[in-house]
Length: 532
Ligand SMILES: Nc1ncnc2c1ncn2[C@@H]1O[C@H](COP(=O)(O)OP(=O)(O)O)[C@@H](O)[C@H]1O
Ligand SMILES: C[C@@](O)(CCOP(=O)(O)O)CC(=O)O
Figure 1 (cartoon, helix red, strand yellow):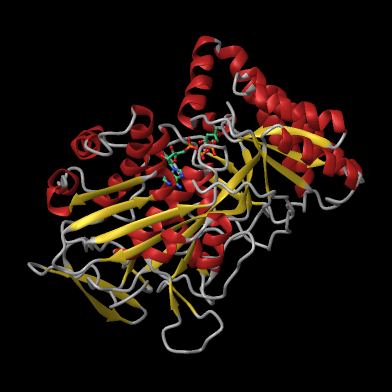
Figure 2 (figure 1 turned 180 degrees about the vertical axis):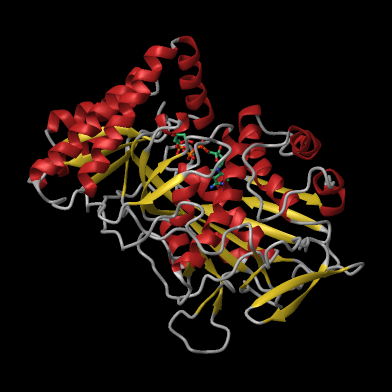
């Protein structure tokens, strides 16, 4: 990734009011809504009458039949549904990374976690090619991946087989081994001349894309280039994989016109439904990239804000509770720059649980209690995030949580060094965040910590090769720039288009954010978000 060496400090912003995002809260659930077809951009939902069979929207024409406020979509046999105009304008989607404040790893085993969106983000530009082209290209320069498939060579017949076919409204909770097998030949020829470790990263990202592309698209999908850049450090515990999966899921769902909005006056419950749909498919991408995800990362990358997340039964949707009182914590985010993989760290805890089930379960249980204690405090009516005693309580929970993660075997000497420096400075309470084994640490700073103390701590951290990030917590989730055009101060027709060349040439995180107009220092009005 384009790593900036520039010093980045953290400030945390308050959360807007919200609602529960748990599935089934919306009056339109995935089981009873469909979407009308329009000639460009996202479309409006249509309620499906009870008992009606849902037509396929993939590769067949549909005709809306208006019936009061209820409309029915009827497939026209033998007619191809136009997925999108081959030269439909380029558009961009973007999704944030996250920090887990309490509960990582335990969350994989059915316990609760508290996590919030950060303002570091991934950006995916979708550029349609002319009708004569039959290729789909991934251009992911952060990992130096550039790969093209011939659309007609892909294993559509396996993915579209009636016994296998999944629809955009389906809940997919595990990967189908036959589909994984069918993808393999199309992943094995990626970056053949690169070292095995690099190829693994390329294949992981490509598999997340391809599984979704083959599940949601059809052989009639338009030829496209998917160009992705991210300001989230990769494999550092900040949810980079979930963020790219949310981008891929939303881009593909937008392309098949399975999403309505986002638009500013969209009711919260309708936005929730759209986010749920994006999130479910992003989870499928996460399963491809890191094997056994809890779903907390993709949930935060989809919906943004800060939430308590819990998935007790993997066959069912998780419980997601919005933390509308999440405090403006003074937070320091430090990257060890020690690479690691979430897959490996999650597997380590799985192996420990197998070898020592009683002890490991007690530690996971204890982490759950830490999360619960923080949640109870944050949700109490008298909660004051600026109160030093409250900060102390949250800080002590941070330290306990870290200790338990150390016992689970997912810390790293560099994470311990960060803790040592923070402790020595008396600046606050630190823990690893995300999968550990390297990656990032978060520190809740003590109230009243002196400016000089903080400066000297930061200087020491940087001198030892750690990287400091600036971010705010609890911002927007996935957003869309459709078309990929910014006004840039002019009311002229057309505005300034974000084309592939500009996107690829933008220098560093600041260059990308400045060009695309959303991120740590940018919030351009042209971007639209599903807000619930
Ligand atoms: N900017 C990116 N471009 C392409 N692939 C990415 C990018 N960011 C993340 N990934 C994919 O996600 C993987 C990292 O996921 P993971 O190990 O879960 O770390 P993280 O904690 O950052 O989510 C990478 O190996 C790569 O396959
Ligand atoms: C360890 C875990 O709880 C968080 C992983 O976060 P990250 O991939 O390191 O950003 C795994 C998960 O929840 O899927």
